Image (tube, rainbow, N blue to C red; front, top):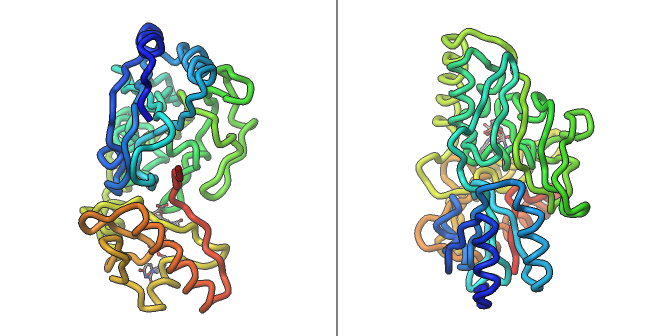
Length: 302
Ligand code: EPU
C-alpha cells in the first residue's frame, strides 16, 4: 500500500516517525518472502496512539512487525502498511536483577548483554532469532526456557483501548507459544527479573544450547524456524520426518533435510509455494496420524 496523500505523509513524519516507501518484506523477514508496502518506523512510543488514530481515520490498515523471524508474508502489493519500532540507543538497562529491555532489542544480543552482567536464566533462548518484543508476544522458548517465566512487567500499546498500558507479569498468561495479549497489541518494552549467575556458568549453558541447535537445525538457510507447533505429547518434526518428507518441495519451498519442521526458502520461493507446502504437509500428517498441525509461523495474508 502506498500512502499517497502528502498531508498524511507530512503528519506521519511530524509525529517523529520515519516513512520508508515501497519496502520489500522479503528483505525484512528471515524466510525472504513477501510483497511490498510502505513502512513506518517509530522512534517514540508516546507517538503511537496518535499515529494509529491518524491511520485509522484515513482507512489505512496496518500490521506490527517485530524482527521478521517467525513470519510468512504474502506476495505482491500488500493492502496494509507496516509499523515497526526503531532500534533505540539503549536497548537494555540493568538494575539489580531487573533488566529493562526495549521490545525492538535483538533477543540474542540481550541474552549475552544480561549474561555479562551475571544475569542468567535465558541461556536456552540464545539462538532464537528476532526481537525481544516478538519473543514476548508469542512466548518464545527453546531447551526448556520460555521468556514468559521471567516477565515482571510489560509496556504495551493496547489497540482495543487505544492507549499505552503497563501490565504486571501476573496479569498476563504465558503458555506454549501463546500469550493472553490480543493479536493487535504492540509490545513496547519489558522488565525481566533474572536469576544471578556467574558469567562463566551462563556462557557454558549458552555453548551447550548453540551446539544442540547447530546439530539439529538448518541455521544457515532462510527459514522461519519451526513451521508447526508441536501437538501435545508429540513432535511435529518427527512425524513429518517419519513420513519421509525431508526434501519434499513445492517450487523453491522445501522441507529441510536437517529438521523436518523447518521449511526453507531454497531459492526464489513465493508465498504461495510456501503456503502450498504447509497445506500439503499438514494434510499428509492428518491422513497418517489423525492430527491437524497448527501453524507456529505467523502468516500475513492479504
Ligand atoms: N526429530 C526427528 N526428525 C526431525 C526433527 C526432529 O526425528 O526432522 C525428532 C528429534 O530427534 C527429537 C524430537 O523429534 O527426538 C524433537 O526434536 P527437537 O529436539 O529438534 O525439538 P522440536 O520439538 O522439533 C522444539 C521447538 C524448537 C526449539 C527446540 C529446542 C517447537 C515447535 N519447536 O523443536 O523451536 O528450538 O524444541 O528446544 O516447539 C521454533 O519455535 O521455531 C523452534 C525451532
